[in-house]
Length: 289
Image (cartoon, rainbow, N blue to C red; front, side, top):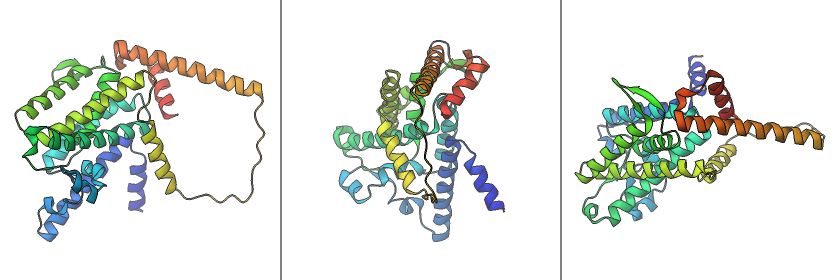
């Protein structure tokens, strides 16, 4: 009964909190396995981290995504999950959970790609072997996406009030500084790769181009494969709606989209906090649909 309660609570979590749970469980499993088998976690994770050499990636292609669910220590996963929880609120207030997951996973994919290219193309990194792990690229993608799409959202950060774009820019510049100083160059490369993807996604989405739609469809198709096909004892016959009904539905959809566009423009100019309660509720319901 308790297991069913936990499963129910998990299903009711937001996609961001589900990802936090998954990352935490994976971290604990490797920690426990390391203790039981008296083996360093780095040895246990070697088939799931992202190598810097393309030939090694061919041996473990799943690592282009699996690396983003692994962490090297408690502080590593703690700060990644804190930032994930923080920036997820800005994205989920405007977009569906499917789009959130698309940004998260593609951020990891492009962050990993930038890491591999950096180690093999930029001379300063060629002589340093390494591997990549952690959700930082995904978090960077979410951070820059939110800051690019809604830059003027204001919030309290410790004792000062700042805008979202200011925080994102500060963290991005910090990554560049750490990259230049040679502090964890692989990790910083993935941060930058994820951030670049988040920026491009937000800019193109504002223009009406969803560059992540192909990935979202691919994820939906994979998920559908695991769903059980429901038996259909009889076939229902539905009448096609009349032209007038279709016309009314189209008008309603157009009016809804116009209202959504107006609210998004208001957010871009004045921030999310400038919305009325009615506008926030409308946007939340529209995101679910």
